[in-house]
Amino acid sequence: MLKRFLAYYKPHKTAFTLDMLASLIVAMVGIVYPIVTRTMLNDYIPEREYTKIVIFGAVLLALYGVRLALNYFIQYQGHMIGVKMQAQMRSDMFRRLQTLPYTFYDNHETGKIMSRMTNDLNDISELAHHGPENVVISSISIVTAFIYLMTINVLLTLIIFVCVPFLLVISFAVRRKMRNAFMESRKAVAEINAALESSVSGIRVTKAFTNAQTEVEKFEKGNGAFVGARKKAYHAMGVFHSTTTFVTEVFNVVVLIAGGLFLYAGKIALGDYTAFIVSINIFLAPVRNLIAFMEQYQNGVTGFKRFLEIMDAESEKDIEGAKELTAVEGRIRFEDVSFAYSDGKEVLHEVNLDVKKGAVFALVGPSGGGKTTICHLIPRFYEVEQGKIFVDDTEISEVTAASLRKNIGIVQQDVYLFNASIRDNILYGRPNATEEEVIEAAKRANIHDYVCTLEKGYDTVIGERGVKLSGGQKQRLSIARVFLKDPPILILDEATSALDNTTEILIQRSLDELCKGRTTLVVAHRLSTVKNADEIAVVADGKIIEQGTHEALLAQNGEYAKLYSLQFKN
Image (tube, rainbow, N blue to C red):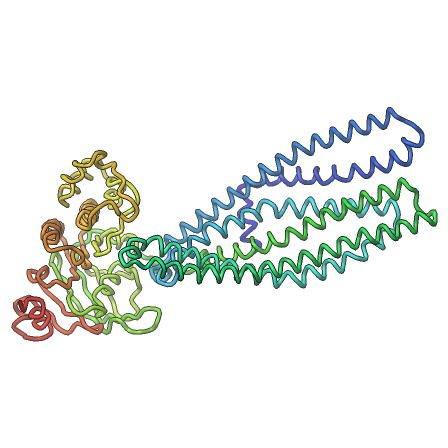
């Protein structure tokens, strides 16, 4: 883990080196004050050498001026290194998220992922900046203070440093409890973020059902868990700080008593004793900094572990030597395909399908039968466990997922639109398309005339998930996006089921236009929308129980006929 963390310093080697050099100088300047104090008390003041007193004071002031500039550099440059590392980690995480399969998002809430990308990475950034500086400055200060104290009085210095092992033992004993407590706290923050994201996204449903109090209770439950987790963390931190502070304060008591006895016995001069007291505080300050750094270290390490959990999640993979899928005609075949999700329950069982090039093939049947799963397997959103799927004569597992998906257009019931302009949402189908091609796609989807009525036209921002548009308008926009992509294979997954009858008729015209010249797989509950399909398959309990044309299936008087009679009995 350390090696992977240090790798993020590589692009900033020069800045980091300068930052560490500045930290080194700052630490060295810190020891100058007790040296000057000792010299003045032992030599210049008793001998009344006022000129040297003034000169040494001026030199000390100049050194502090240098330290002022260096401290600014450390704070600014150090933080910028941390921010740039954080930005790189965030970029790496975002890219990684783009490669993860559907199964990852099935098991991880959006709010929790966002928490890792914001809160966790911010703590890592702070560790990246303050960690090396604290270690360098504090370590050098401790070592130089120790050496200097030895030059003053060896025996007194050794007496003081007997306390150091006690401090280290206490620190390591409490550190593990702190780490576990902070990990729990981080998980609690992620839970709150997930609840907040879910609640805000569903605020319209909450208001429609007047369930604000229910949402508040759910949020407060997570909020209470957060308080409990932080309570444990702060308890561990309180024990750590109070205990280690007590040990460091014992240093002062030891110096006071032992130094006083040494002074009384004539084993140390007053100037040396004064310099020793000043120097021991210079030693204690970095010790306290290192103790305080332990909390930051725990935050950063737990954050980086959570970052690595995302980075180490298994991404979508193509087989070695996978080829690009080109010149697609559009035939789709399923051969004995079985599939189960992560819970192990089989969703499809030995499904066989043969969709001819340019045909409209409909999937109907009860909810949960496996229709949408069939659609998800074609673009390899999930990998087939048993059996084979072919596009034309090529097994889809043998081609790259990207090239496969470029040849497939999908229009779903739940349309996702980005909080961007109408133009940007249509361009998502083909980002390098021209303005003329965008307008042509909008016209073919019957949305162009509406866009022209808007004050900003195609530059109109439609809000999160297209909240400023009606259901029909959102659906037309998604259809325009697919028109622009112009794929040879089209999947319509309940594309009109959420619309009213009038809007459905209007959208159906756009879909009929979209289907021309393409192999189309249609999932529908409303049988009126698929009765003109070239072939219809009834899917139930993960199996295809009937297949044929609308007329042939009615003549069989089986499951399809029952569904049809239920929908049109009046």
